[in-house]
Structures are given as C-alpha cells and as structure tokens.
Amino acid sequence: MSAPPDAPAERAGADSELLRRIAALRDSLPPAEARVADAVLAAPAWILQNTLSVVAARARVSDPTVIRFCRSLGLDGYQSFRLRLAHSLGSGAAFLHRDIGRADSPADLAAKVFERAARTLRDVSGQVDAARLERAIDLLTRARRIECYGLGSSGIVAADARHKFFRLGLQAASYSDAHVHGMAATMLVPGDVVLAISSTGRTIDLISSVELARDAGAAVIAIAPPASPLAQASTVPLEIAVDEDTDVYTPMTTRLAQLTLIDVLSIGVALRLGPDLSARLERARDSLRDKRLGETE
Image (cartoon, rainbow, N blue to C red; front, side, top):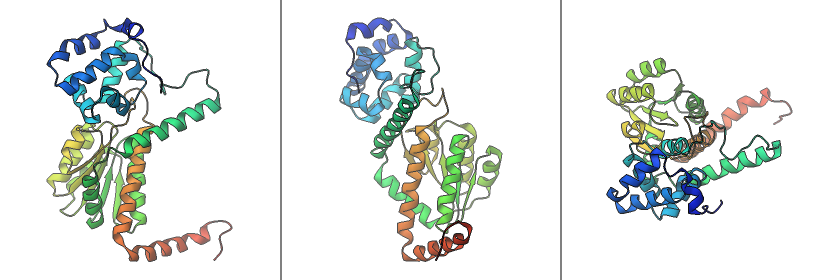
C-alpha cells in the first residue's frame, strides 16, 4: 500500500464536481464524516487505490462511517462513491482491475489477481455481524425448505449454495431466473428460508421476490452490501462491503466473498446437525465411488 502522495499533486483535480460538493458539505457533516471528507479532499487519487477499511483507518473512523459519508453525498455506498470519484478525476477509462496494466506478464497478472482476492477475504472476514450469522445458521438448520435466489453472477453463487445445503441432506433449490424465483416465492410457507444473494443489493426483480417470500411467511437471509435495499428487505442481512466496481465489470472478488460466506453458513449448519450428518455424508460418498477412476474400497 503506497503512502498518500503530496497534497499539491493531488489537488490537480480539485475543481472537479464531486470534490466541490464534498468541500461545500464538509462543515455540515458530523465530525466523524468530516474526517472522511478531509481524507478524500487531501488525496482523492489515493482513495481510488485503497479499500474501504484502509480509508476508514486513515480517517480514524469505522467502516460504517465511511459508508454513511457516501450516503450523505447521495450515493448508496463506497463502490458508487469510488466510481463517481474516478469520473470526477477524469479517468473516464473502463478497467478490468485497477492494479492491472496492459504491459503485465501472465505471472504479474496472476500475482495481482491472487493478492486482490486474498485482500478481499481479509477485509470481509471482520465485517459479518456475529449475532446475525448465528441467527442465519439457526434459521437454515431448522428450515423446512431452503431456496437460493440470485441473478447474473450471483445466480451462479446461488446454485453453489443449493449444492452445499443439498449435500447436507436439506431440502434445497436455487433459481437464477427472475420470473421463476418470483413464482417460487409465492408458494413458500412459514418455516421456509430464502437465501438471497446480490453484489449490488439493488436488483429490482430480486428485491421483489424477497418481498413476496416475506409476504408468504418465509424468512429471508440476504448476502448484500450494507444498508442496500435488499439488506433492508431481509429478515437477517449478512452485510459485506467489497471494494469492487460492479458497474464497470463483472464482479470477481465479490463472488469469492459470497462463496466464502456460504461456506461459513453451510459448515455452521453441518455442525448443528450433529452426528447423524456424518452417516448421511458417508452414504453419499459411497454412492460416488464407482463413478471415479482409481477409487477402491
């Protein structure tokens, strides 16, 4: 992580629209949010190169304070803020990964992608509320039926979640078509659980299905950005803020964070199910032995 550059070099873009708005609002913000504003105004380009948690540490505030600062600007979170800031600084360039350049060798590319993935998982590991995680595991363990909803890349994650819970012997399904999960949601009953997954938390069709599920009496666990519409519509929001520009390219590290959180949920459920689960898993493993080359008793 590089140190912030000198202020004079950073102020080259100080006349841009977003930075003017921040400067104008700075004195009316709560003290903690004002410290975030100061950090942005002092080194806007440095902000683009660092995660939410790093920016929060530099401003001496919590991660949620940075998100509240973004909302004070009329934006829905840190991802949207970074995108607007990039535009304000005149980048105008779509990119696949902010650290990757055209001159990078395959070895450089691999090192940067792996490092970014590891950094994302480290950042997200401390974000999930322990009490909500406990409640989510309890709901999933006791569920009559689990339905996993997602669209786009989050639909692929939903399919992985269904597979995880199915392997535990639970009644599970996944839907990545908006019409299908909308219809499925209307047929749920109390005791059913929906696991809704979204990188942005703003997808209208997914939020609509979640509302239908709750109207039917089902509980909803959402894996979504903090205070997003999807998180607010859920029974138990598992909020994760991933420093990734989902409006510019297909989410990469967001998907890894979602998959890891699903692993946490499925392992938590497995531990709750107790000794009976081991026998079921052994029977399932036995059924696969004759379908693999080189496996013997």
